Structure formats: C-alpha cells, structure tokens
Length: 150
Image 1 (tube, rainbow, N blue to C red):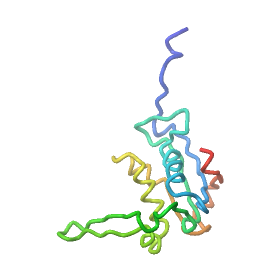
Image 2 (cartoon, helix red, strand yellow):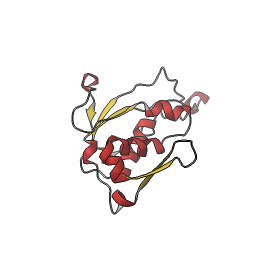
Image 3 (cartoon, rainbow, N blue to C red):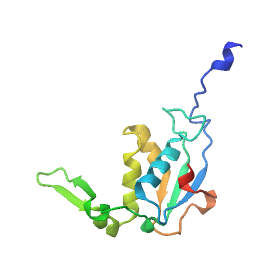
C-alpha cells in the first residue's frame, strides 16, 4: 500500500456541502430531539466530519409549541438569567418560558449542546425554530426527516 491511502480527510469551509432539513417537533421529547439536532448541526453524522470547521447542515424546526417535556419538568426545570446588576438574578420555570415563546426552549437546549466558542456561535446560526408549521425557508427546499432515526 502506498502512503496516500492513509491520509486523513480534513475539509475546508469552502468544500463543505450543506443540506437543509425540516424537523417536526410535534410530540417529541425536548432533550432527545435537541441532542440529535445538535449532532446534525455540528456535522457529526457525516463521514467527512472535521472538528474545527462548520461542516454541519441547516435545520428548520417547526411546531415548537407542540414539544413535550417528560415528568415534572414543566414545573421543576428552571432557566436562570442575570442582568449583571446586584440582585438581578431571574429564575423562570419551563412553563413560564414556554408561555412567552416556545421556540426559546429548543434554542436554549440546542445551544447548550454545542461548543462554547466562536465555532459554536457560527453553528448555532444554522438553526431556525418556528412555533407553528409556517416557515420562511421554503425556497431552500428543506428535506423532511424523522429526527429519531439520526
């Protein structure tokens, strides 16, 4: 065997071929769905995965208002934010966050599963979440997938 057959493939961002996927969040468990979404966004489902390049695909999530949380998470799961001022800590339950905007639940869950650096910020921009079945990405022709099979 020659030495060329053992070279590691390392993609550049110009060489990445991105696809668009459509995910329906109806009756999906939040954590299981979001971990699969994060895997696709990062590109780990591809054989040509390169850790330092945004080689993942774009995802459109519809019906975020129909997502499911198991157990008592609607009341017990908390989201903490801080204004930066003394006494500025705010604690909201999942039910309160969901009432304000259901897509925030999915966005926060996926963002927490991505790298905490500049690459993670770039990858997160490939996610679009909509509360109902109407979305603005119809011109990209997203391919509808079953997220549980990834």
